[in-house]
Length: 335
Ligand code: FAD
Ligand code: EPU
Image (cartoon, rainbow, N blue to C red; front, side, top):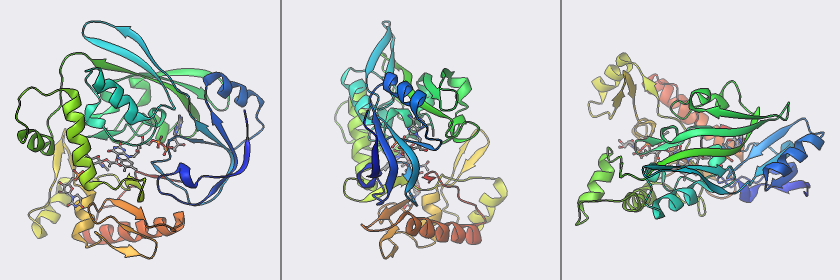
């Protein structure tokens, strides 16, 4: 195990912010992790996955543990489903690819989401009507203080919209080492999103597989989200706000076309619409800006600092609050 000093994190965060870790270590196995935790004197520890949901505003003090624990292990298999345990450092989209290539169902709608599977339960990743909680069985995690291993089931994780116990009560307290999910062998496609149906209508056959849906989702996502390989970003910067009927009515009076989604008494308005309505789409302030194909995505044109991006996000938040009386909440973790 090799601890590096003043290690650059430039290529390890998708916002492409140029900061460094005071100490950095790449961990490949659970055993190495436990050994490290037993022997380390570092009090400050930051866990890094694929770096696709963080905005780094400073050099990181203490030890950055880059969790690269690998492995995909089938634990149970019946004629209806399989239960798979996956190392936290596996790349999420490779797991989706693995699943669709085996004609398994459950995570195809989550295709092309960057990052590692270890971070997926933290914000309960979601897209196109599916969230990881829908296939989640349990996760294994080490308590950073006691160094003991714990298992968390779905109930323990307290999943919500882009939320879990690991963003609240247990924030920064555990390092997730394994995630177990249940995939179906039976065709259980979730085609509830209009954009998916529209794409499928163009294809000349009726029975679709998870692999077909993966291809459709990849196509849709590529049309509106920037590829972090070329443009620094962390996906949606804010969550879509949940509003009450009064706020919706006030906005409707001025903008009858406002899109909104009702689910179990909750009303969600797309933050991207609110931001676009206030003319931020395509806005550029020196080194950072708002993506011109999707206003919920803030981008780094090259040399922006984390602080530059935070300052832009604050201006947008303030504008949305003043004009629509809605307080946007960050989805990205600002460090
Ligand atoms: P990181 O950014 O490395 O970490 C995120 C947080 O989790 C940090 O606080 C970190 O300390 C903590 N963490 C990471 N790994 C562990 C671990 N093993 N144990 C404990 N804590 C840990 N998200 C969606 O939900 N839906 C989308 O459709 C979506 N689309 C995106 C599109 C783009 C282009 C981008 C750049 C991002 C998108 N995201 C989306 C956000 C992001 O990809 C997900 O949140 C992803 O799960 C983050 O994984 P990561 O490994 O990169 O986490
Ligand atoms: N819209 C605009 N202008 C824009 C962007 C969006 O008006 O510039 C409006 C449109 O009305 C559009 C609606 O917003 O129909 C919804 O847009 P989109 O389908 O792109 O989805 P989103 O609500 O912006 C959410 C997630 C995404 C996820 C997609 C697909 C959040 C915060 N974001 O985005 O997740 O991929 O749905 O399900 O919930 C992420 O979390 O990083 C992320 C990319």
